[in-house]
Image (cartoon, rainbow, N blue to C red):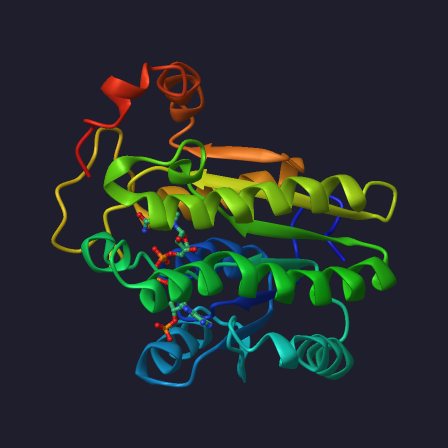
Length: 252
Ligand SMILES: NC(=O)c1ccc[n+]([C@@H]2O[C@H](COP(=O)([O-])OP(=O)(O)OC[C@H]3O[C@@H](n4cnc5c(N)ncnc54)[C@H](OP(=O)(O)O)[C@@H]3O)[C@@H](O)[C@H]2O)c1
């Protein structure tokens, strides 16, 4: 259970090798989050995330999870909750940026981005939310993005997938009111890290560590929506109302 000072003792990460998830785990484990289950695609990145969590002192394990394996999500959720017991936090971190130049001309690649970021992840969250509803406590943290607030010409495939995920998470949060389970939507801006490697940082760029800190704080406070950095809440309040002719010229 999340203890009296708001610290979780167990976390399940969907997209267990994610760099941002790693930063969250690095914040939570030293504050007594001992059980860390990293659900992801097998490979060296997942192995490295497992080692990093263990090095922090966590009892960490990996389990197989593919966000796009929709037909396996009910079994995945049943097995992971039956095997490990309750989770205080489930962090939905799986996602791909895609390549807008390719995706906007290739239906299969566009659909792959949408499946990983939205339809597939939402399917997994439906399965996991039912388990959390049953346990009657805990927090679902969903890594959305400011890119989903208003789709940009330069990355509308990714942006639209995040818009779908974000809307889904808002609705899920409403559906879970009264169940003991809360939902936190995290909307980072540009994070300097693996996903954005080689790209020019956007204004108000942030770091994985800042995202980790913001998520840890949100779990303690039970915040429903978090921007990283927090100033983006106000920046996007204005940006969302820019005339379209200006908005579509914004660089990637
Ligand atoms: N970095 C940013 O600038 C930024 C900004 C805003 C929001 N976000 C969001 O934050 C989340 C984490 O991003 P990150 O920066 O930590 O990127 P990352 O290090 O690339 O992590 C993304 C993870 O998602 C996993 N993944 C992708 N498709 C999957 C699938 N079908 N099934 C299971 N796992 C899958 C990847 O697994 P593999 O290791 O197997 O490839 C990878 O470990 C993403 O949802 C991203 O959209 C990132």
